[in-house]
Image 1 (cartoon, rainbow, N blue to C red):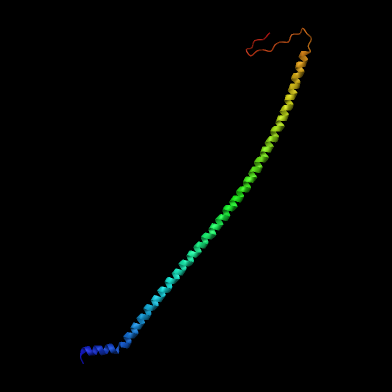
Image 2 (image 1 turned 90 degrees about the vertical axis):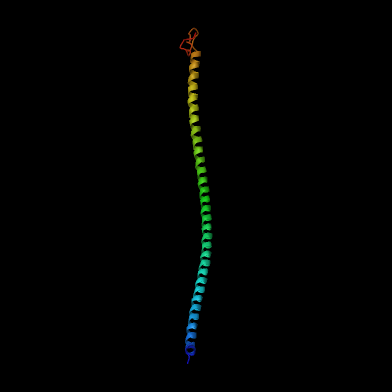
Length: 144
């Protein structure tokens, strides 16, 4: 037999083996392709889940920030009210103190006025002929 026929016969004899090997390669490649598709789908699902979780976290953070800001506003309002109340109390206390001091000053002035009036009355009742010295001027000279 010619060599070509023998080779052809060997190929035919190995046909099953070659086809089986080809089937194995195809099965292996399909398996790898399925794994790759599954991996990519899984990654895609993970990315989608991560995006959804990220959006959820952002929404929760915004809600928390708004809650904190509102709490801060309420606290500031309470403190402002307390500050106004304390300021008003201090102003009222200062007004009471000023009024008390003015009344004491008025009493002292009334006492000084009464003393001055008594002195004037005493001097006006002196017998005639007694000269009352005139007050000294600013330049130190005695007036007539």
